[in-house]
Length: 214
Ligand code: MD6
Ligand code: FE
Image (cartoon, rainbow, N blue to C red; front, side):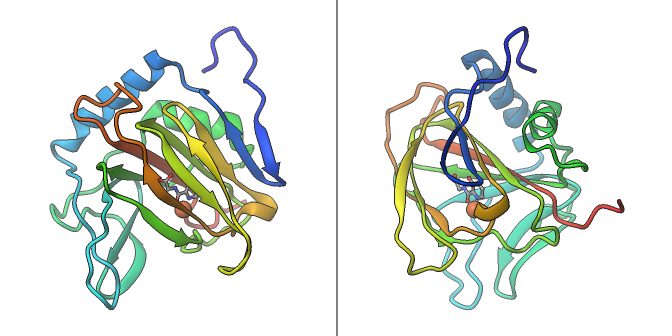
């Protein structure tokens, strides 16, 4: 995975929040984008809606893995099929599975890989990732394309926040005491990357959803 070099050191701004700046080389990023692009034909990005209000997210989504995260009128949950096509989600790319194994130290593979696509005006409100069973499993994400302003809060919505840039190839993990921290994307910085032909940003979030039999 990291060829002949040891994995680069992570920044840990608060315990359990780790950022590996530029962990994926440009070549790895390009390979990952090619893999995603090939799958997105049959596993298209779609615009989910918020529960209750029915307002569309500004982010387009799809998933890879046994389970995918979906949102509709009835709430947030994991489903084994794409809501628009009715097909199973494609398998999580091997590269991402290897990254999970290398970085999380969790004893079971990820089951879900949520793909978020941000156009120039998309953002994601402050939220917690809490639709998963095993909260001892980290959540790991890879950013590709334009840089994003990531906001990290505390365990409560009102807690103070700090913000970080997430650039293409950066990897972020929320684990342990940071697993339930609020976080969101304030905005992306259009034109900061040449990785995606039409610009924008992809974030790939890997999660364990069910308790592994251990
Ligand atoms: C994003 N990321 O970076 C949104 N959640 O576009 C997340 O919501 C996220 O990056 C949990 C762990 C890592 C993440
Ligand atoms: Fe999240």
